[in-house]
Image (cartoon, rainbow, N blue to C red):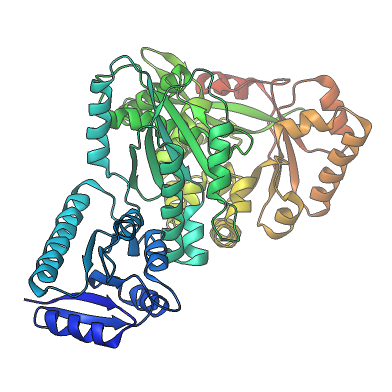
Length: 557
């Protein structure tokens, strides 16, 4: 059986030798002749030292200073200390115990007493460590998830007339801290946050770290809670010595249903904390009914999406694009609409962001692409004059290296020319993934697809992107068109963008056009095509086909 390691700290060599002889048969021993040397050794060997025998009166750094330093260090404070001294003064004993010593012995040493006390204090420490391992998060010393849940449940039962909240704290961009400073520094940040949380929430001292950088605490409920307490906590967190602002996001759930599982309470507090991400002027968000309703709606959408696709609840609407010079139909944009059998029309603004987060957008996009290819094939075979239809390509689609093969496969399957299927890619997608997207979009253009940059002017570094990206057609963002046509200065910016696009041999589509005044402004600036309610709203396929049959069409270039 491996021996435990103990440290003997005494400035008198004779005392070190005596203790060493008494204990060397049972323990591995480290020696230090003053407090400073002892602390250096402890920092190096803290993972193996099971106990310390500490003399009080020493030069350089006495025993009290050693106790103080160990008490203030998270790791060293866990090592039990037995103080030894020649004095039998009770005040010396009380002072040592008050500063963190676990036991006290006097000289001359009694071998059996020292051995038993060492055995007891080491056994007690190991037992406590085992209990803590079951109850506590190993890194921060806060309760683990299971024990936190038990403590909250017990507190709710023992104080039935009190109102409580669950507080959730998360660290924004914590992975960046690990990447820049290393995991050891990241762990130190988490321990510092745990200390601040423990101090801030000391009313009940029920705090936990569930996983990673997510912390929870049970706190007293306060009506119309202000930001001050959490603002102070933020300030204390940022006292940690690191050249980076540590931004927290906080959420609070007020416990109204005490029979609710604690894990559900924590989930609601975390949901509120996620709502608080990126809000630098608001220190916390409270979970309320509007958040609950939105979550229920998101759950409904997520649980219904697969069956909706199988049952063809998603329908393709077409919004025409018009040539500004001839006012003939030059193309259309394919827009997906969800017609639910019970709920009716569901707004794309409600379900598209959810599909982008959960990845279902890739299946929906393929469904749209294939449906459009079928429709174009039908128009060609029926003798109608087909027009180019633009389909949306989501950010997540562009991460798939097989995207060119998938789209080309659809074109081949339905035997239609590439010129009838334009690909719309949002400006923001270009901005976020320049190198990768240039490569994959370049492959699509080589296959003969026309690329439209959608939402141009929506707030990104548009001119730089425009110079670098493989694009054929520029679609001006709806708000950009509506806002820039209001005043002389704004018209100047709009005219400059259109002129720049034409100089780069790009066609321009202005979307969101709603008034005759906007039409005249765009026409005077040389804009090629328009799309918007002024001419036509998005419409079902049957209405669009009827419109095509009675309208003049031109090819979009």
